[in-house]
Length: 100
Image (cartoon, rainbow, N blue to C red; front, side, top):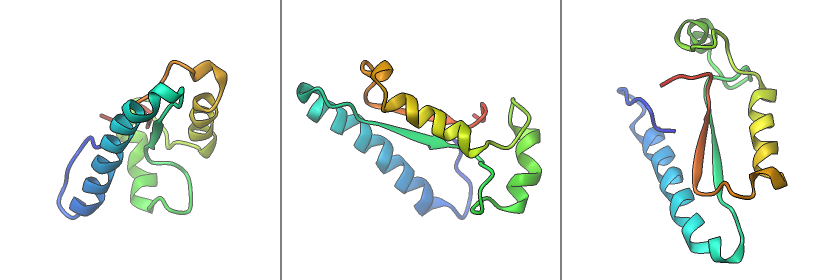
């Protein structure tokens, strides 16, 4: 989710905004075929890609007080591909520990 803009990330933020619109519009275009379209927008997650700065600051800026784990993201992705999510479409789901 494109939540905060800051200098130096204009292209990154623009690409995220494009994905959000793609999800919303494609869901409308293919819904009549019973196809759902959603995206997962992870926050700072404990992977090789996350910077040391994020590792240090995430607990302080996240209401849940920790860096996300890959399993946190995987759980939401698993839900979206399950039958339980058959009524969920056109959504970008932030899996970010409550960062807004």
